[in-house]
Image 1 (cartoon, rainbow over the protein chains, first blue to last red):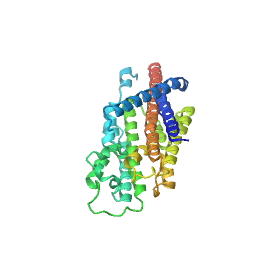
Image 2: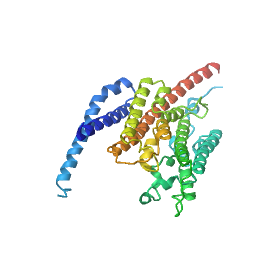
Image 3: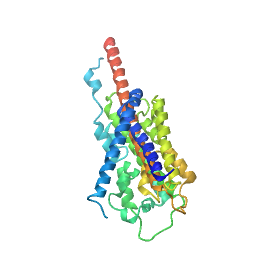
Image 4: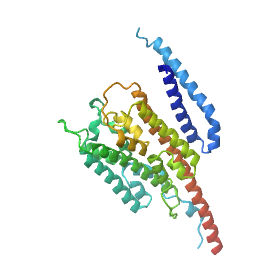
Length: 66
Length: 279
């Protein structure tokens, strides 16, 4: 596996743990918590992608050192 | 004799005050809610662990911290902050050590674990004091739930849920958090299992309890002889497993507290009804 694939796999693994614990914390009922998982996971990954885009944009504009 | 509903429902005290007092001085929260015996036990257990840890480590645990990270609030991100007076005592008596270097004592890592565990134990006692404060004055509780479930959930992630009867949730939490910690340890090739090397990351992963303790006893403190490609990712994963366990412990606490209050309310309603009939 190349480096990017490993990073993406690790990110998805840690995202799953974060989202699962977050869902369990916010919803006491197991069934409801499981139903919430896909939506919460997409929100989390989507939010991280937006953050990534912002960081890359800043890196190539105001924080560029080249 | 009949009981008025207002007397029965009057709580022992303010839960926030009880938890703050217990956090600052072990047992003070229990004294506030009128449980002096538990207060004495809490004080002795928490300070006993702390002093044993200090003795075994010769008061050198905080010398693990890099010199440029040392400061008056450096202890705020350590598990020892769970016992504020203990942390203040430690900083006054030992701090970051003398200027002259000394070799680490033989059992410094065991001492470090005991010191950290004393902080966690005090948090559990503070949780118990806060739960007692919410209950009516004339209620005698059976057992230490939800504080005992919080302690179990720290020691083995998911065990608190399991003890509450939420077995599926407990199993998933265990697999997820212990799996995350093991993955992190594998990525870091065990270099994360050392408070001396990673003082603050260790504080995070300490919150995942016994799995960390066992693995550190078996494979911790190894020499790092080469470059570890994913060492940083491993450190973050191990630390995150511990921090996510706190989220799970909050879930255990909230569920247990709700159940305790509901049970107490039901028992009191039955007692009022019974006493009304007797009168």
